[in-house]
Length: 178
Image (cartoon, rainbow, N blue to C red; front, top):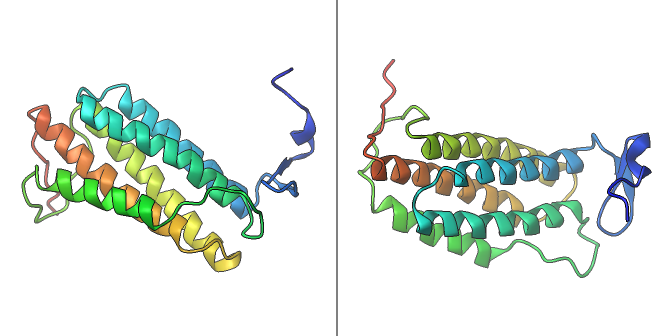
């Protein structure tokens, strides 16, 4: 089987359920940005020294495939695994766990630090873009609340993991001052 199908040469792609849409639709842009987020997390993982953080990020990457499929499947599509409350609860538990391991935050911080933390901050920025697109998609084509909630929690997780990774590397937060 060849890698290329030539079916998308006309600027269309298939959604789960079979409908063909233009590749620049909001739905495709949204799940494409989730894919970009997944790739950026992979870049960050390549530099993460902590095996526990790496395992958590691997789990997150697997759930991002679920999220991408969720977004790629119109609500009427059946048999599609969807992101839900349980996925979000796991993120909240991990956010709370890692937040307890870093100093309380009282100011904005500049993204950066060690390579792994800088990669996590970059992933967080991509996640926020995916979240903005998901918000617009929810408003225009009801996708349900969970993709948006999941992305909101994901950005918080990536932020706290960046802070934790910097702390583990002996790098403190650099606070923004006007």
